[in-house]
Length: 159
Image 1 (tube, rainbow, N blue to C red):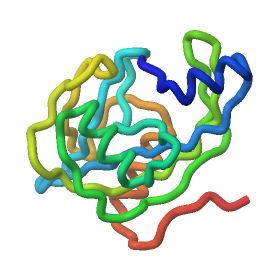
Image 2: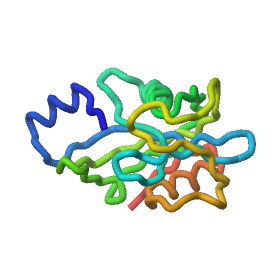
Image 3: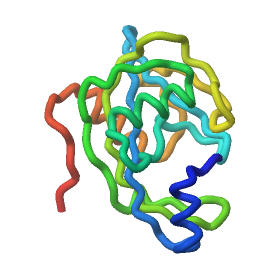
Image 4: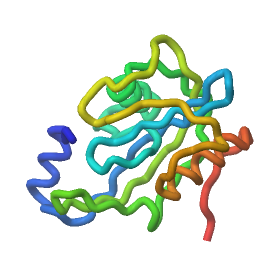
């Protein structure tokens, strides 16, 4: 997986220590009510398209860029589903780097283009019916369920 120059510079200073990492994820629902998922090349698992924010980017700008890079699809962010973090969002990468992700998750509709594998981060890009989702980590399932409730209020975990 490519890492941005910004993150490379941070990692040069902090090593593999836990890094608080703001990011975005897209729950993209087509006209048939299906959800677009990405099977990642780093671990072979299914999940939501998205990625890390860069300094100076707005969250929706990051979302549109990341989805385009990964799926070749232009998306229209419609609302924030929620802001998520916590134990489910702590990740350890193959190289030993650790991150605590703060995910701003958006409900989106597809715009121009047809979804396809568009970079080396994905093995497969495909729509799934909500009742036929492939196995995936709970953090993805939770955000998809929250998005499909179609509640205009953003979700936040509370202690």
